[in-house]
Image (cartoon, rainbow, N blue to C red; front, side, top):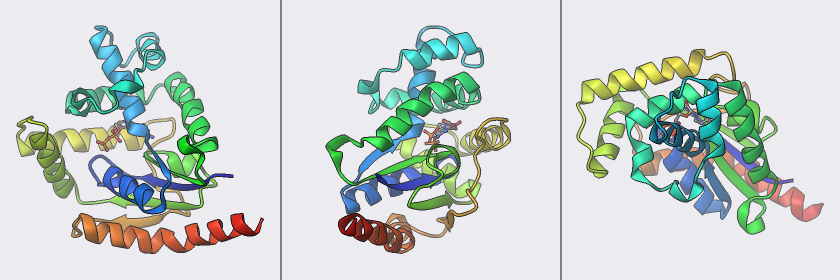
Length: 222
Ligand code: CDP
């Protein structure tokens, strides 16, 4: 059984950065599940389709090109909003579910563990994860982080507009009927509003390390 660290949270909460650093620390595989929804959305938009229509969204989900996972085109908020729309369609979630559980069953590199970040990892994709984190931060802090991230990609955007978009997407993600964004009851909550990346990582590590160490010991014993 793979040792799984599930990292969930709202838009621009810093979950992706934390998940990547946790994966590097433990030498585990990492999957940002948001990329799957963003690639689906990109594929729909590039084909001139409507991300809210199931047939278009499913064509997008089947046409995912994982080699574009690092493409800055998926990072725009237009794609983020479209990702939020395709992600509310049950057939799309079902199609991407298998990809994610397959990744967790056989993480690339065949190491003992995997870190996955998203919205429903601790609740739906990996309810039996070894450790679960729910990362949050005040909306204004998250908008500023996204502003900086986009600036780094050469995209200039008004802070107020970004805040509005983040709040709209959070609302859509939290209130959708299927797999809504929610903290799993057994997840540890980490509010990073007042923490820089290093402090957030130290706090995250303190929460997951004992659980991961215990699971690694059990594996060696078993
Ligand atoms: O980077 P950011 O936190 O803004 O978003 P993301 O993690 O890339 O996810 C983009 C969108 O995909 C989210 O707003 C969700 O609607 C959807 N998503 C989801 O429904 N379930 C996941 N496990 C991951 C993302």
